[in-house]
Amino acid sequence: MNLTETLSTLQSLADEKVRKQHLKNGARENLFGVKMGDIRTLAKKIKTDHQQALALWETGNIDARMLAILILNPKELSAAEIEKMVSSENFAWASDWFYNYVVKEYPNKEQFREKWMNANDKMLARAGWSLTSGRIARDQEGLDIPAILDRIENEMPKAAPETQWTMNTALAQIGINHPVYRERALAIGEKLGIYRDYPVSKGCTSPFAPIWINEMVKRQK
Image (cartoon, rainbow, N blue to C red; front, side):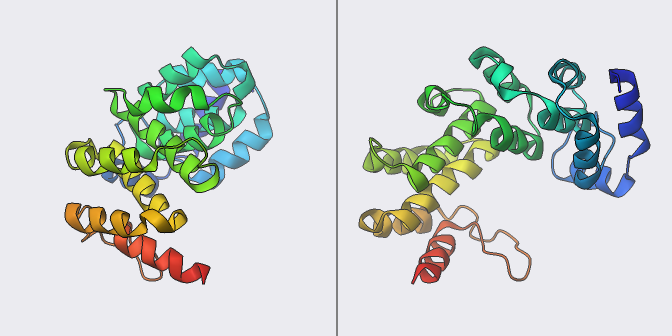
């Protein structure tokens, strides 16, 4: 299946409800609105095709980019290419797919973490804080947790919404995984009040850090 055929197939799979939902969640107009399951099915059919993946990414079409993420070979991407791709995608859903399938699995991802956390680009910063959240949850050695809490307390209120989301995740992970800093994490969450009134579906945990932290700690007992 070549690029033209792949784009034609994606367009044929368009679902107006999905398109409207993506637009409501901040997507740009360059998308078809393909269901995630259909994108995954198409990716399994194509398998790995790195060159086509790069071509799909260059279209800027959100569905094409999400398919590209599933069929590219992360090991063939240079650090510069990864950074360019992260900064070029503003739709949070697609950027998180790229983070989970590419950045998080990249062998030397630590090279990005602090650089991106300090970047002016909101999407690089979003990914940098995601990497930090992962370190907090799984590999805390070498992290200056008090300094991270200071940054969250001072910077999160003014951060772009895209970055604010992953900074909040880092705050919650500190409270969940570091009992010695839990009280401060809870206090920062209460002080900032970010996501306090965030609507959540029945059975889901609120992203408001104090609720999130307390719920996860309760489950650990």
